[in-house]
Length: 330
Image (tube, rainbow, N blue to C red; front, side):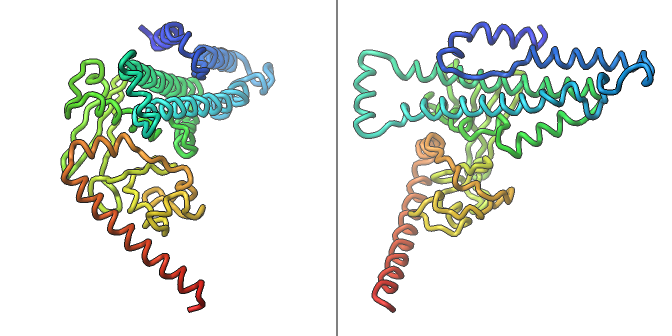
């Protein structure tokens, strides 16, 4: 079955879910019609001389006036809306899973009457399907664009999406969703059948990697080694660019103290890997990932926590000593 038919069946099967969650999706069929019109225009160019046909009615291949006016701008909006919907839904889902205080008590009480954990797991799988299907639709429509126009504009647009952080499969919330299922399974291998087709995790102290298997044999691998301390991430944060670091390492790179947090970083502070500025303000605390590492490496996690607390205490003492000296005039 062609992807267009598969994607249409998926949209029809999940129509109620889309309406209920008010989620956007790629207008694959309509964009394909635009490319079909452009292909027809291109064939007209081959059968007619340039004197007989006005230039503005013809596909100009590398820069197509018929496509470019709506194609990339609409794809950008759709990708941005899809990423926003996915991130917000996963954030809400995981908040229910790792709720604390009174909310946690209420949720545990509800489980006596309703299997909320299974409902959360099912919604998570729907979100995985949602992000992977739309990512495939964008990838295939851009490939068709380049084929019709004999160009690399579609490939360049994909790079632009990555730079603008709307590349769907680069979302840190996808890492969190993978960690959620590995936590939910309650075992290192993820033995529950409904999850094992999607998520696996190979963790060791030398090269910790989390692997996600999506539709169309899309394999995503996330290296869980902090690029600063070169150790397995502890208390991990994903910056706005998607790179994951230990909180203490990221704070050190941004020249802020651990107790101040990454939000206190200067807008000019850059990611240690990609050197992009302004990524600390959009950092995400990957709590599910931290929980997964805590459960699988209890001794290591406790050692890192003790070291971080000692460093926080040291930094706090130095900070308040300097504030006290400033206040009394020393």
